[in-house]
Length: 276
Length: 276
Image (cartoon, rainbow over all chains, first blue to last red; front, side, top):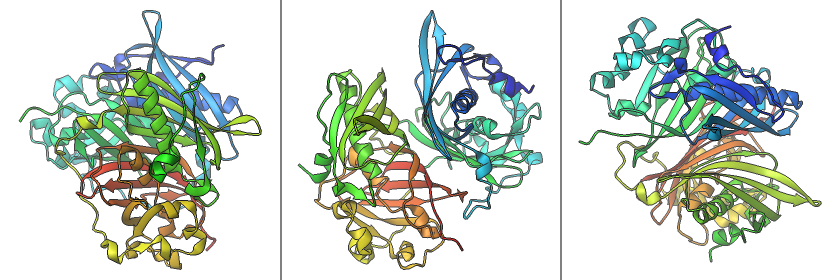
């Protein structure tokens, strides 16, 4: 089993409907566990609950609000199936961790589930991948400062950034508010609908390209999975339109190795900027 | 009191925590009540519940999934405040309508609430308004076919579309997947944080510009309110990046009369296209 599949595996549902998993710092970034991994874990448990209720299993939309950062240890995902329809189902999932015997909510999300095999026709309109430097010219996590490259997440992901968008790593952010690059799992596990949720939240915060530093917590995240990805590298572009009062939107688009748009997200994040 | 404020007014909370309002077909479009109005009603009730719990009242993010179309009649919004923090609060709201004595869920949403007066500094990055024809050259709802112009919603809104983006109204969609125009409330009620939620979902479905016709139901909607708007006309741009398998994303940006970006949204919708 791949590292990713192992990390998002849960047991359940228990009598209380909860799916129980275990977080490790192998997917940590800074002092938190990567949000994309948490979303994939929650989406997988919710898809299982939906299937048991006669509903759909593929996440089409995932809208979450984040209440507190997750840490290594036991994690509980409690899905509630709200509706099972002909082509789509709807569900909510509440994710908690036990802290000193009390369940502390980490995030909750609303999901629309469906069957991605229904959405395989040629798009009427799409956006082609942003021009990005070839893999061989991109910077990898191995080039990052040890404080970052030693984080669990960056050992699990092979993440390559276009040199035009990594000036921030050497104190010279481009100021455009955009990151472009490539992504795959380090153990060569091929992408699928679940791992796209990880891909949508795997890149460094886009505000690094505007001079922000340090942790940029997600307040709200909404991702859409638009198609099952082909095997191979994913191409990723993030950008921000509006940064004000310490809040920013980060829009992410993911294309598969055939150039097909397979996932989109937007998140609202909080950022700190050094005093000028 | 303005038509808009009257339409989103509720009584409550009742003993069960519910806020009760009344929908009329004055805000209808086709056979449904406009989703933006429903979201503003739910956000207002949730802001009140949050304030009573010591939390914040302004909606910063609103993420909803839509389970069934709303119709004229009584409507119940039941907010739950999940957390009140120093700078933000988190809440969920479930919106139902009684049908034959049974509560039928219309939508539910996750909200982040804050104080927009904290976010008034000059943006570090923003997007300027898209070039749009001046008001005097735009098409108004009065120019629309009676089937549309007679809908309640289009009597309440003064909605003007750039002629370059209304070819679809005469059977000649541009094919770009973009609408641009202007918006204000017909009774001259000035925009505020709540009415921005209406503005984000007031335009015709962006897929009309790609040849789609008829109702395009929202599956998921996430809106961010980024600043209080100045008085005057709002400028609105919607566009789609990816239309496939009958699903599309619609991104909306709203600027106020000073050209400041004040709100953003993305929704996942379902569209029908005529057989070709």
